[in-house]
Length: 206
Image 1 (cartoon, helix red, strand yellow):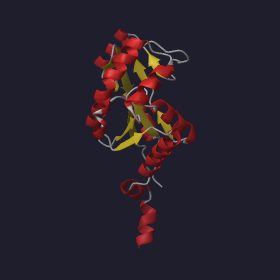
Image 2: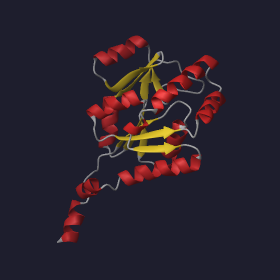
Image 3: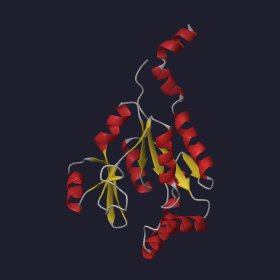
Image 4: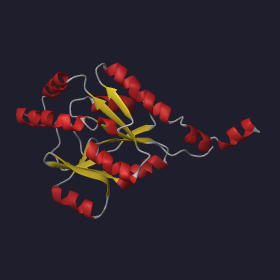
């Protein structure tokens, strides 16, 4: 049986829609899924560790990496830079692992230009009110930051139709089941099965 290549998933959502909780649950439930650890110039939040949530770097180091073409995608979000290492992603895909890129719609467009087979999943909140309550409930952002995120959320959500799958995160358990189903289904696509089970299919059809 041929070693299969992993799938690259793009996971996007406005802040507060619950994408982090969903992908963390998926990582615990599925040993074949990995999350890409991005580089960022923003300061670590309470409880975050360098190399786990992000690789925290200064602006000059980030700009040097851009000049070296080291990023699969990169973008400026609010006052901070975010980027994804090319080599890290391709190494995991070659191992047959499914990789999640947790990026915004702008980063998703960059990834699709380089990797058209990427599979997009967009997470929507059940309402604007719920989104605002979730952001305030974090207790990590100041009021002015929350206001900026809410103002930007409508623009972000307007790009939902650029993605193959959309999950409305109203009930967490239901949203999680839908996310799992997408990952499982993508592993049984006909071209992939034909590639890794060529001998079996030839035997069955002979």
